[in-house]
Image (tube, rainbow over all chains, first blue to last red; front, side, top):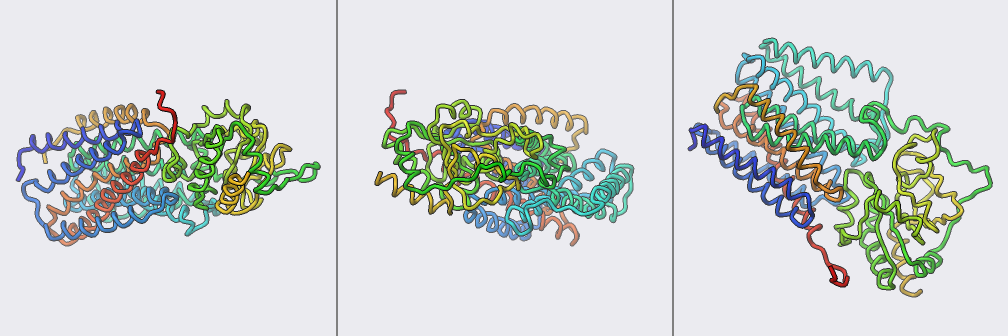
Length: 462
Length: 103
């Protein structure tokens, strides 16, 4: 049993060092897994240390709760498909935030609301941020899982209502800091924060989900950190803040990749403004040209350099394994094959890299946007598989387009472009794509997986 | 638990923020999804808070709240770790395609 606070603090310091090293090891894919193991050791040290604190009881409850949580966690982690990773991350954000809010609630109750002002501040913040993260993450999960529409959901007077809820929550927070001891205050604060979390994510469109998930990640980290202030726990403060910093950084990176301010993502209700904007003009004589797998196979076989541009459509069709097979065939013919990865390809930061890694594509073949854009003019064939908005030249030229200014992959600079697409439906952002009318572009319609399989056969025969 | 002064805690927080930005900015784009699930795992550290609440709870309300917090936090820790490990294993498993080993 540990009763000496110094021993406790030192053991927590070991955990902190493990967490920092875990993140450091993530700077290279070679050491990343070792880093995660180190993080795991840090967590075990922190948990074991806490369990050994003098006076801990209720062992039965602790063991049962840990058992239930572990089963849920392991089953979830094992079963989840790599395409569903954004939902999974959203869910874990949510449960973490929920736990932080509950810890704040329980602590308020334990102290009967009699708090110093800084305790009050920490408890109010932990309850507030944790609850927003919990309900916001659940809505993000529902959107990504397509339980509710991925489109922005807006209703009249939304901003006024949001403002009222935030003002109410802030007033309660201030009251708690000022010494309000009533139990209902913290409960009401949590209820308002939960409502705000829902209302804050609902109006955000599916295409902006990478930003939202990163932001919720930061929220949960900050909530954990605030909980550390409540319980005077250094490990919670530091570990929570590391996550807060990471989430904040990723949020900024994602917003930058879409050339939008974070405020615009959160309050802009993307996808609402496309009436008349960025529509493909079908009346100017240009039409979409369809092609066949055999033609594409010939085109590919005679190319020197092929750049594959994978998008979420490829992932949904689970075509990444077949795409790799196709790439291997082309490489065997001496053709240079690369993958161009847009920073917001997929549904969360770095999502496409994980999907391709799952298909055993060596990460050395994956090129980031800045790197590959200079290579498109020397590319013979750009093969766009289920990607849409990130290839739309309107982002460069059409000031009326909702995605104007977003950095894109310059596939239109390749000598020829093949777009594999299920149908002419617009992409996730709901915007039409000029690229499809480019005279250099041909379209291969159909399910991505089937099309790629046909290509594989055709290339083998070519 | 020892009482730490608010200012000391705030100092630790701010330093951790700078450290976090420094370390995270070195993570390549390629690993951003594992980074998110890895940090997901790390914020599971609220389990420490959940254990303290549940372990010292003596009335039914606190026990109930602590119990739920403990379930959520454990799911966070365990799930977050396993999913990150699963992902990173895919990055490590790298069948070097017959490239001349010149380098």
